[in-house]
Length: 82
Image (spheres, rainbow, N blue to C red):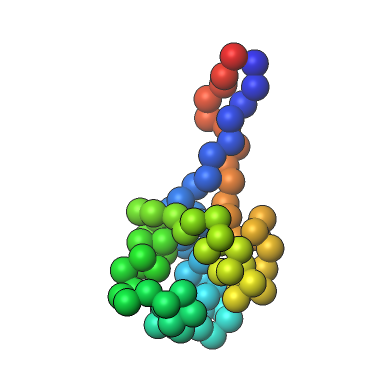
């Protein structure tokens, strides 16, 4: 039997927002880097209703000058498998 970790999307979103502010970036700045027509995807990331794709996470981590481990919040397992 083993524990299954999971990505805490709400905490990750809060982390993205905190790191964005610390880096002096606006939501619009991030929107322009990704070439999004609207900022909705970024707000969804911040509110934890969706997650960036892995390639967008890599770009976001580079923009915020952090590692993926520092960006994504992984919680301890709450269920066991096996």
